Image 1 (cartoon, rainbow, N blue to C red):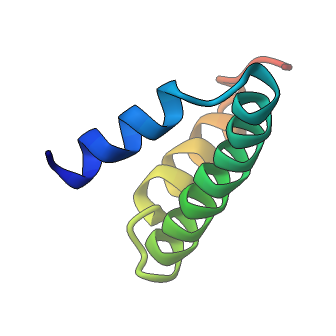
Image 2 (cartoon, one colour):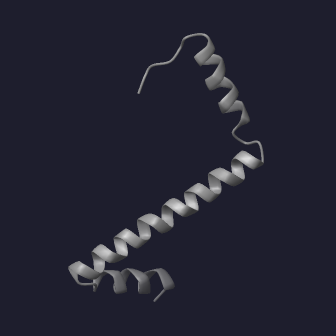
Length: 66
């Protein structure tokens, strides 16, 4: 059995309450990893082109309110 299969088996054996707690933890964990990746990408300049395009579109009035 692989490590992932072990994890899947453990998760499938959780009670409803335990699963809810796991899900809440995982959502926070996943969001933190995503935020860290965005931060690294921004620091490396990987988002500069997108930001420049967004600002250019805004200046041309090519946007909509959210």
